[in-house]
Length: 513
Image 1 (cartoon, rainbow, N blue to C red):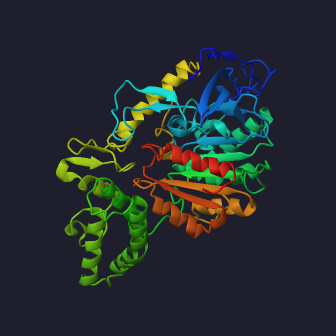
Image 2: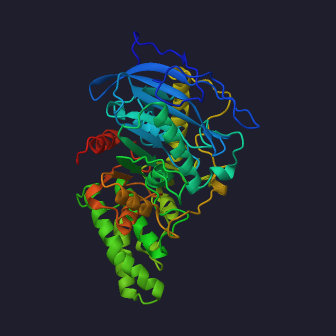
Image 3: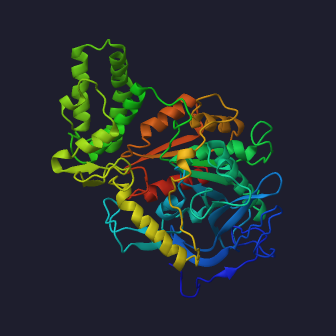
């Protein structure tokens, strides 16, 4: 909580470009920017406030800066404005680590990591699992924030949050895999320059599609003649991936058999969470290891045989029996095909109780009746925690950060963005997974270390799929840390935030936990 003697106050700082930066820049030019093109673009000055908090017993004074950074094309014409929120320790050294944080989508703002685990303030729900989704919600100091070990910059990619296309910019300049990475790289380059932080250790954190963006960014940050056409020469010290989506659209993807096999452990973990199976005294870690071993050997082999028409009835029945034991569904639910989509599983696991479980987090439930089929509002997890996150963010925006905008904040934007996303890549083998980009980045940078974090109960971006992609891409195991948590897609909900943030601290401090 901000103390009485350190009052939140709004500081107007003139800027040639609105800096979504540290609040340390001084002597800047006037607030509005006159674009050197046929179209003028005005960008408001950043809003700077000062605060204190306590993290891991350490009292930290920090500056929060909220505002826009103008992007320009090679002709020096304005194309977009990226809005960001930066938290910088007061009196910190210029070589203090800095972490750039974003979520996914494509089309998501950074509100989830901002208010869930990384930022100095976080949402307070009445329960972290199956909370009420109506007000009042709360905003509290975040004891698990990473501000004690790094300055934090939350980036809302173009088209999300308050970030927007301006001037001569067009949707096709930003709404694509390479285009998105290029714009975020441009923002990071500007931020480092305007804050004199080029010599600071740099970290990237991305959740969901943000994990793909984080895997791609080292290439855009380094630059080259065949990619981007400029040499930025920026390397990063570490990357944190959450809810990893490394075999998404634009990659070769997975065979039907392998996709089914990699879905099984998360479905089984959800059955474990709801006590629908005989746990046999196993921890979730031990149970997941057992199911994953079965899924990637006997189960996958049986699925391949079934696809080839060579699976006999005896083996089919034996595999179905094991599937039933791991998932709590009857043997007949797995016959004859031996596969089930996570969606079908979510509807069947607790059907006798009239409940559907969440795909994003299998611990959450909603009544099965009157399901409207909306993939967010009707998902038992997303439908429950989204309202709290967004309400808490707007409360913090107004009361703590003193930001006043006359346009809505796009927490997640699908319209005119996701559905027109360009998944084509430049300069990589066709169908390469995003884990392949990560392996290339680690080859180029022998000091780059990676933390991959997943939730056992995430049936959308499963831990097994992330691990499979990393293994197939040949990501160096000696610089890779894999952690699974008793949580879902937002793996920091449900008493896991402290463990996750300490794993990130270990990465920054160069230690293995």
